[in-house]
Image (tube, rainbow, N blue to C red; front, side, top):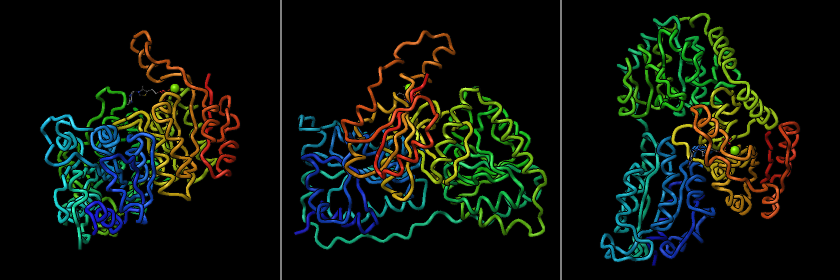
Length: 526
Ligand SMILES: Cc1ncc(C[n+]2csc(CCOP(=O)(O)OP(=O)(O)O)c2C)c(N)n1
Ligand SMILES: [Mg+2]
C-alpha cells in the first residue's frame, strides 16, 4: 500500500523538488517513509528557522522554490520568521508540516505540540494555507502552490497534514502538470508605454528584485532608451560595470536628484519599499509623476499607481515593449553621463566609515569573481546596500532590507551553496547576527556546503548602538559578548582564520575557497 505521506514525496519529485530542509518529529515520521526511498535530498538544520532561511537562500540563488518539512506546533512557529522574510521579498517557499489528528483539532485538549489554530496562524503570513484531509486533494494543492510560484508574485505557502491523514491509503495519485504562466502584457499598456518612452528626453529605469532574472532584456531597454538604471538591494548584480548602471540606493540624495531630474521613470519589479526608497525615514521619496510600472501583480501596481501599469514578468514586458518603440527612436543623449555623475555623487555621499566598509565588500567580490554574497544585518551590508556594484545577477541578497530578520545570513548562505554548488558562496555576517543561527555551522558541515562565513566582529550590535547615540539615547543592551569564533570553528571541526582588519582578506578568501569546505574568516574591528 502507498500511504498519503509517500504519495506526497512522489508528487514533490514530480514537481522537480530535489532538496528539502527539515527536522522530523513524531508528527512527521510518516512523511519520511517515502523520503528515504526517493531521490530527494534531506538537509537537517539545527533549528526550524534555519530550515526556512535555507529554503529561502536555496530559492533566491537557484531560482526554484525552497521546501521545508517541519513538525506541528513549535516546528512551525520556529519557521514563521523565515516565512515572513520570504513573504516580504516574494521568495517561493513551500512549508509542509504535520498537525495533530483531525478529531482533536481546535478542542484545546492539550495534545503534544497543539496550537489553538495552526492554520489560522499560518494564513496570516502564507499566501495560502491548506489542510489535507484526503489523498485526492494532494495533486491539486501542490499544483496550486507551484502555479503560484511560476505565474504570480511568489511567497511562502503552507500545507498541513494531520497525523491520521498521513497514513491513509493513496493509490494511483498522480501529479497535475500545470502550464501556469505569468500574465501576458496587455497590448494597450505596451503601446501607451512605448509612446511615453519615445517622448522621453531624460528617461530612467528603476530595477528591483523582480527584475533580477531579466538582465539581458533590461540591458537592451536601457541601451535603447539611453536610460540610467538605479538598482534596489535585491537588483544588485545586474548590469555590472555597465556605463548606465547606478548601483546605489534611492534613499541617497544624489540618486533622488537623478530621479527627480528624469522626465520618465520605468520601474521594473520594484514595490518601492521604504527600506530601499526611504532608508533614512525622512519621507523625502515621492513617486515620479510620469511612471511606467512593470510588475507581475496588478494589486502591487495598484498600491503605488502609475501612469501606465504593465502586468507581466519583467523579461516578457520589456521584450514586448522594445519592438513597440519605433525603430527610428534614438537613445537619449547623455544617459551614461547622468549615470556616471550619479554614481560619483552617491559614492561621495557615503560616510567615510561606510565607504571603507563598501571597499571590504568590493574586496570580497574581486577576490572571488562570480560569488554569491549572502548578508545579514551588519554594518558592511548596510553600507553596500547604499552603494555597491555586484558582479553576478541575483548574487547579492541580505537581511538588511525589507523584513530584516537578524540571523538570516548563515542558513540562507547554506541554502544558496546547495542550490548553486559551482559558485563560491560568502556569508557576510556580524558577530551579533551570527549568534542567532551559529549552530547551522553543523548543518553546513553535514550538507558539505562550502560557505565562507566572514564575521564582521565589532563586539556588539554596533549599528544599533550608533542609532541610539544619534538620538541621544544612552546605549543599553547593545554589547552582547561574542564567543571566540575560531575556537567555535574548531569545536565543529571547521577551519578558521582571524584577521586583524581587512588586510589579508583577499588571500584568506582564496585560501578558503581552495579548501572546498566551510570556513570562518573572522575580521576583528577596532
Ligand atoms: C530578529 C531581529 N532582532 C533584532 C533586530 C534588530 N537589529 C538589527 S541589526 C542588529 C545588530 C546586529 O549586530 P551585528 O550582527 O553584530 O552587526 P553590527 O551592527 O554590529 O555590524 C539588531 C539587534 C533585527 N533586525 N532582527
Ligand atoms: Mg557586531
